Length: 288
Ligand SMILES: Cc1ncc(C[n+]2csc(CCOP(=O)(O)OP(=O)(O)O)c2C)c(N)n1
Ligand code: SF4
Ligand SMILES: [Mg+2]
Image 1 (cartoon, rainbow, N blue to C red):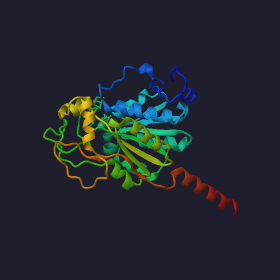
Image 2: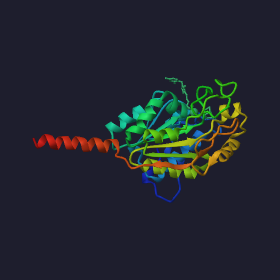
Image 3: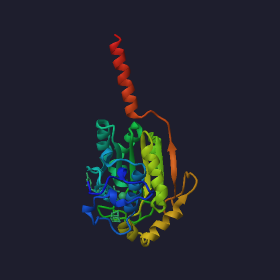
Image 4: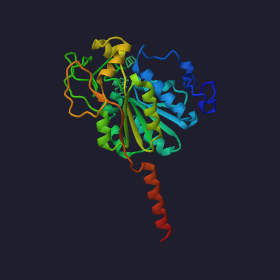
């Protein structure tokens, strides 16, 4: 851990100093200039800082990808695990150490393609942890292959004539699979993203926040989306204030999305149910 004082011991003057949360010895970081994942990382650390989570009580698990790599810079307990498996790893970790705040950072390829099965069951299981899903619509790290969230007609290295597949809506899938907290925010609205992440982390149960991020270097270039500020401003065009349904894919337009808390449900958390069941069984045994 870096030499700076732990955030929970700092005087609270309303300011957030990101350096308190970073492994400065690993700088410079690997991210391309303007990569949305860096903005998302800042929002997450800001949220943890405001929630006054102690570094020793925090475990951040990530998969493989530019998204997953961001976790390495967090000055806390971090685990960079196999591609597609951070939710499975985090599940074991949380069962063994329920006292920890467990946050998973994962990409659209990591959690929705190779890790899709773990994603469904984490939503269904409702173990108390938070998934921060960095959706940049592409496999950034491996050179720009199509992902389940690539917008219609977009160019990637594996869709040289434009993507033919419909988009996988992570929030709708999470809701259908039973996640008890589902939200979405764009990096354009960093303070809103921070607030949403705070609410998700404080939620008792499985929470998922989809972050609309940007791969400026590969996706942006391949699709002529302009420079990084232009890409971020483009997020605005796609934001919908109201819930959307049955939207028609329009070639060369970003996929529309709406933001904020999309689902919040009251359902027994996995470990609470487990404890109640084992306690009831113990009492039954003792009364025999
Ligand atoms: C088992 C396995 N399969 C494939 C890979 C190669 N691989 C590494 S990252 C990645 C995709 C990353 O995409 P995403 O999760 O969207 O993250 P991003 O880089 O876009 O943030 C792939 C296919 C791997 N490391 N391990
Ligand atoms: S390749 Fe894309 S996702 Fe990866 S760091 Fe660069 S801009 Fe970000
Ligand atoms: Mg991606």
